[in-house]
Amino acid sequence: MLYTTSVVFCLLWISAIVRATGSPFPFTAAQTACKLLNETLPNLVSFPGSQQFDADISHYRIESAQNATCSIEPVTPNDVSNIVKGGGHAYNVGFSSTLGVQISMAKFNNIHFDASTNTVTLGTGLIWDEVYAQLDPLGVTVAGGRVMGVGNGGPSLGGGYSWKTNQVGLTIDTIVSHDIVLPSGEMTHVTSKSNPDLFFALRGGLNNFGIVTAITYIAQPQTEIFGANIIYNQNISDVTKALETFHLTNTDPKAQLIATYASVATQAGSFIVSVNLFYDAPNPPPGTFDAFLKIPSMSNDTKTSTFSGYIARTSTDPGIGPIRQAIHVVPVVKYTVPILEEVVAQVTRIGNTLSAQFNGSIVIVTFSAEPFTDPFAHSRGGAYPHPPSRQVTPAQTLVAIQESAGAAAEPVILQAVKNLSRNVQARAIKEGQSKLNDLLYPNYALSDTPLELMYGSNVARLRSIAKRMDPQDVMGLTGGFKFQ
Image (cartoon, rainbow, N blue to C red; front, side, top):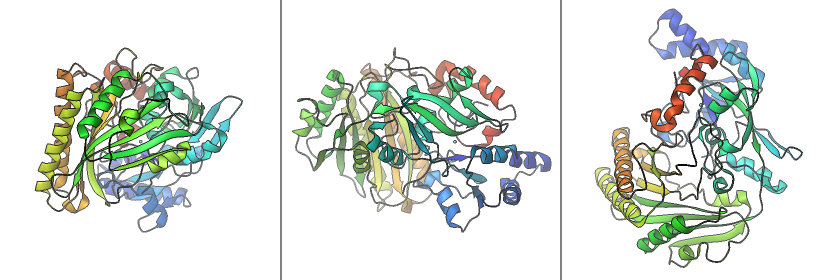
């Protein structure tokens, strides 16, 4: 299921009602706010049972979904301003959903390429595959998300690792400006010159400073690309060695890959490695991916295609229905064989243990290695620190169990993903490829991750900016990591 990026916003009205009535029950305040909104903006509000409401609150991941009291779809920045006057990769509970008023940005779906300035402006209600499909015929793209169904707001406000990162940096390094409705209701255009503090904060600071309605990026040239999705169920040690060699020796910024070590089963014993190869041109130079291509595989989808075509065919839905899951992140400088052997051992052990515990439910345990080549070489700073002096890559860990296991699986999932992350990082530290104080990528990090472990010394500055931009802490009523 595809879902649009939405900003979860329990309105200032709700806050005012709660303060005035002293009601400890958020539904009472939310119901009142929904009633007031419906009287003021009747054409924008929807309630449970309507098609718009179902679309607005829809989430593929069970743990991301909550039943809002009502939803609202603003059409213009002025609509957003009026609402306020009266938060993508977010899989943590409450980060992209609410029990109160859900504001869906689905109507903010304009795409504009300006050849004279070589920029692309995107509404924040878009998903990346929509963006790429419209930009492909123009021969341009932006440094955005790598899978289908991901809203452009999340990577753009949280950091943004892309298939262009080796060449141009993170998504936030390519942003020229933001259009935002501040918590006061003021609409403003933010650049590095017009408001350097807010521009800094919006590059990685997530949904803490207002509702972003549009973002302008530097346009990147885009030809057809070479890509492959290869699945291995044997010769895992050969894949591991090829991955180590690639990460330690690759110097071509157009060459990237993601290797996912996975246990996917209803019983113990099923282990695969899925490797997505990407080269930003129709044909890679000889030797770039040969080590992977010559290993016998379970399946191999290798071809030259459009960029949007590659995103579509490497982002297939596994078809197992609703799941409960948790993701986290392990910072790794370079992937070596000992680290990856630890990955295999941990993924296998946790997968087998959970499969036995939740017999009959599909259990998924994965570790996705992302061997970027100097991903911070083009860093322009921002809230999310990514200094060239410490080039860590964000390996994603994931534990998921089919919804049939029920809510009792949630604490088990959380503990399992923490164990997986901790144990692999311990081996990476032993190998000299990670440190306990290496910063974690906010878009992957669990909800209880300390701010200092994601933003380091930037936390104090971000708290000051949040207090100045949002003195009433309106954005504190939304989900996600908070600076107030």
